[in-house]
Length: 171
Image (cartoon, rainbow, N blue to C red; front, side):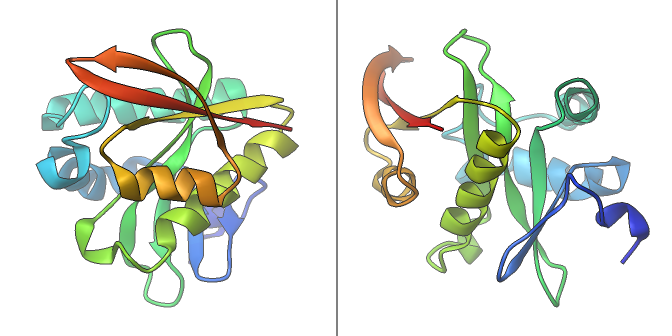
């Protein structure tokens, strides 16, 4: 593995490597964010490749400015790209939010829970006293992940006619 993968910003869990995104991740990110099965439920939905390029630049800058952000999630051993997980400031002013999006083919193995827990713990260690996550009320799998990592439902709002639940974690 390149030495850039080993830094205070990289997380290793039992089965996963979480690495801040770089230009080398662009092809994987373009595929992930263009897939409606993955990004259809995310804020602002599926992304065109040119938007993914801009978001990658924003993600890299966010890490530089804030010291935390989104990670690319890889399976240890094989190095397979599974998706993304991390922390981003919500554009609606609700706060810093935990996000995760993995390929449907790798769901059901606990990877989202493992990556989300690692990102949440990183955020609290980085000094973020309050972290939130937002899940569509009908997305039971995502809600289960949030509950399993200790987040508590605190609020709800409507977004494009869908009831969204706000979960919270306090350091």
